[in-house]
Length: 59
Picture 1 (tube, rainbow, N blue to C red):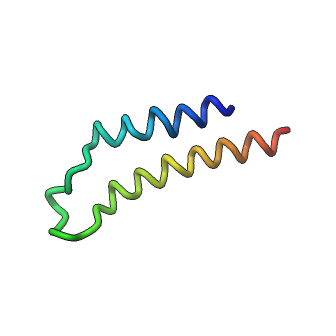
Picture 2 (cartoon, rainbow, N blue to C red):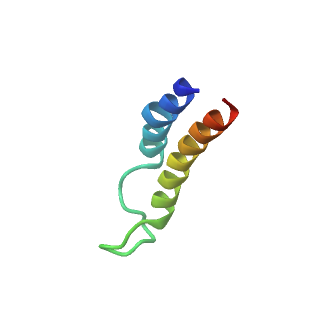
Picture 3 (tube, helix red, strand yellow):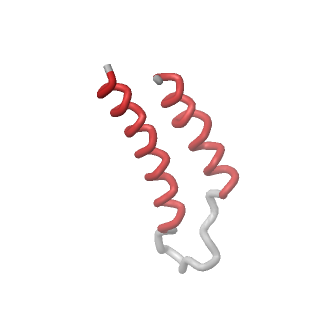
């Protein structure tokens, strides 16, 4: 399970960020936070935390 979490954090999250892009969204005003991008990042991190939690619970 550690390899799955490592893959999520080291490969999948950065790859997703590069595909979606780091630039500001066209619909977001200047200086505003891109909530969709932030939400996707949080979901990736929560999925890694959930995988760790499930693994620990099953031991």
